[in-house]
Length: 205
Ligand SMILES: [Fe+2]
Ligand SMILES: [Fe+2]
Image 1: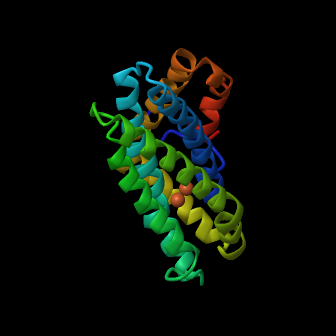
Image 2 (image 1 turned 90 degrees about the horizontal axis):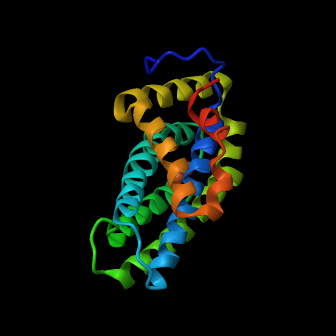
């Protein structure tokens, strides 16, 4: 299927980002479990750690934070939400903190166990709190201040950014690999990976 072959009623930009948050929360649960395994001195599969790092740098940082930083936040600023000393400044600062913690985790390198365990714990807590603030404060504000026409424009920018910056195939690959990892390495997380979750996120139906 061509990347742009959707027949859908476009969802709002905040619905789009909230659905990505749901996927990110699933990966945070997986990462938390990996951190606990490491801390307990158990063997952790290197390829799973490498996959999580790819997900966090590509899906979370480049794609999701990219959509917020390049499109949503500047638009909110134009509609009166302050950046310096306001919620946008806090969100941007937390994105930077996340990037620093991702580097500190060093999920692809071996031999820094304590630093990795601590950075995982801090990253998971930071991102969960960040997502909570966006879902419950910033996005509600956005839904109030952005006119419908601007919201449609943002949704289009998000869809274009998926196609040009990352590629829809990349998103779908991450989702099916996540379901497989949840089932194989953390059976307690498997209930999150129902097949019904997959099309809900990216099929735009
Ligand atoms: Fe964010
Ligand atoms: Fe977000």
